[in-house]
Amino acid sequence: MRAKACGWGLLLAMAGCGGFVNGDLRTGTVKGRILGVEADVARVSVMGRSDLRASVSADGSFQLDGVPATSLELFVVASRTRAARKSVVAQGAQVTDVGDIASSPGAFLTVRVTAEDGGIPSGVEVELKDTGLDRIKLEPGVGEARLGPLPTGCYELEVKADDLEDVEEELCVREGEEQVRAITLPTDDNGGGDDDGGDDHGGRDGG
Image (cartoon, rainbow, N blue to C red; front, side, top):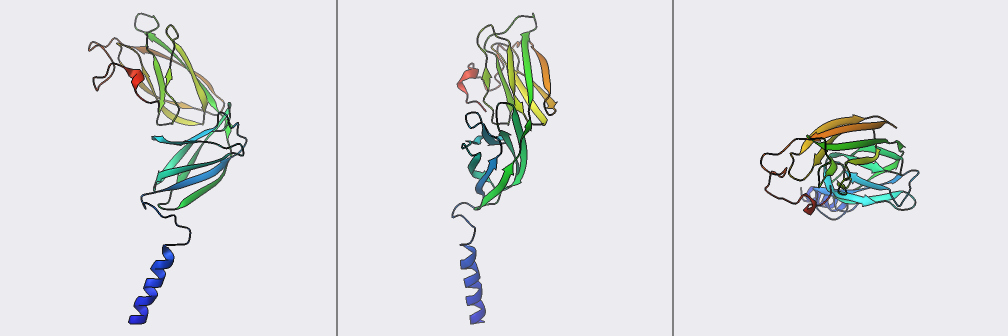
């Protein structure tokens, strides 16, 4: 019995080495390489976690730390015209290598925003939620934003402006598609679209 106990102790000690990374078992690291990148615009993020995103090296390599140990999807912008989504199962306290990620021609979404009276509202912000892309804040008098490249899939579009109700819509895009979406923001009888009582949309970080 004593020898058996020592054997188990040795096995547990070995499990603490190997391919594991000292750290929280609830999170790990995801790395890989994106093919055909333009490093000045390339980026990768975890969908649904706007705080988990990283830039990409000139050779296409990237590394995301603190990734939850679960099934998730990467949102990848490879270049000015190409993008991808990649499913991965991140392992706790380990480095998960997703290998090479090939991109496809991305879709582009043009969002045209008006108020109910047909005018261009002030303080317009456009965001594809949970993608890690920055929220677009339009200049005064500008009612159109172009988002992309977007990998094939479905997204939640959020549009807001000063003193108007926010609008959220689900949309889907296909490879290489050019899609135009017209959004009319209704008048907000409560005086603004923020449910939390804030009156400055621009004060929040882009997601």
